[in-house]
Amino acid sequence: MIGKILYINYETTPSGATVHRDRLYESLKALGAEVTLLSKPWKEARGIPAQRSGFDAVKRWLYLKHTDWAFALMLGRNLLREVWAFLRIRPRIVLLNFTIYLSSIPLARLFGIPVILQIHAPPALHSQYAGVPVRWKNFWQVVEQWALGLADGIVVVSRALRDYYITRGVPEAKLIVVPNGVDLSRFRPDIDPARVVSRYKLHGMRVLGYVGILDRWVELDRLIDLVPRLSAAEKNLRVLIVGDGPLREELQATVSRHCLEERVILTGFVPHEEIPEHLAAVDVAIAPYRQVELFYASSMKIVEYMAMGLAVVAPRMGEIPELISDGQSGLLYSPGAYDEMAARILALLASPSLRANLGRRAAETIAVRRWTWEANAKEILSNIRALAERQEERCR
Image 1 (cartoon, rainbow, N blue to C red):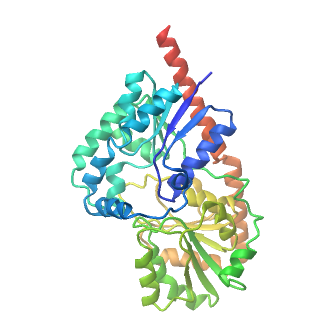
Image 2: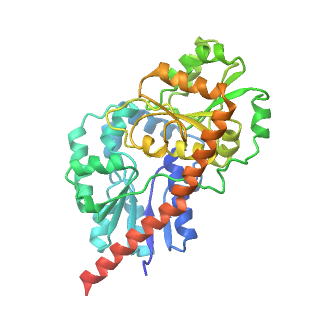
Image 3: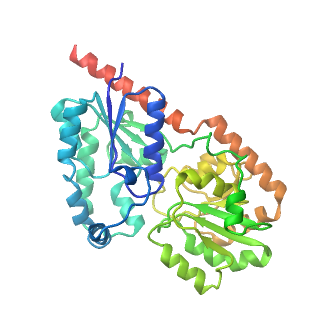
């Protein structure tokens, strides 16, 4: 018997991180786990943009300009909320989404409760890739190392992230790899795209699509730069960019500079529930990740693309070649090789049969490998159960 699980996750930005939180929580509940989610107010917790106050603007400014001070203010801001949750729920296990909200770790130690950390990204590297100014890098690495040492188990989303933490001295036995997943009941090849096709006037068009946050670790600027070349070969090309983020205004300016308003569609924020019908309107899906020192991510967008039966173009980085077999279930290109990326896209736009074959194999790959939220929840519950049993043995 596992007992009560307290899942602490303060992600608020509508993104893959909030989708991960919600789908994992739902899957844990569906499997019968007695789990309570400690998060932000409901609207933010569901990934729905709320009305932003002046205080929100100040917080955003502080994060972008003085990131270290923003992190420092986060350290203990949820202490009282967590104390009340520990007293009210009396959990058997704490599952903590690791940012730098570290007050819950000593609290769990005080109450004698094991902690499993869930890590999507190393804070120092993520801040570097997002282009925010972290100056106390050594300090935050010490804080992170302290948390890693106190945790009873650590769930990471990729083998690259596991290997990174092993080089940081974390015992391999402590690390569990659980990649991002997809809900196969929502993301499937038979979704009707009619509403999206009508909304964006995509009838008779060849659509190159991207879904995700508009941020610096994605080379959407380079993709837009390639659109004149792509449209010279494919006259009916439309580029559908679904999502929002810090670079939206900059990308819109790039579109205007190239006079591509009719070719490139920036939809803005779209609720995750509506993403499948947007992807159903796409012929070729792109994941143009920027070349970085360590590609530690587990790409949720690629898994969703593949589950929809789409032909995918992506860089040969991190775990992506393990997920996409080049020429079999998608097409890969060398990171930063924009001519090769363009050639891959054009090859797919020109060949309906190639798109269909790659898309079919992509959907089969996801179905066979079971990269699903349910499978992820089962893996995490299995490790929680083992941890609870070890604790029982120690207490006998």
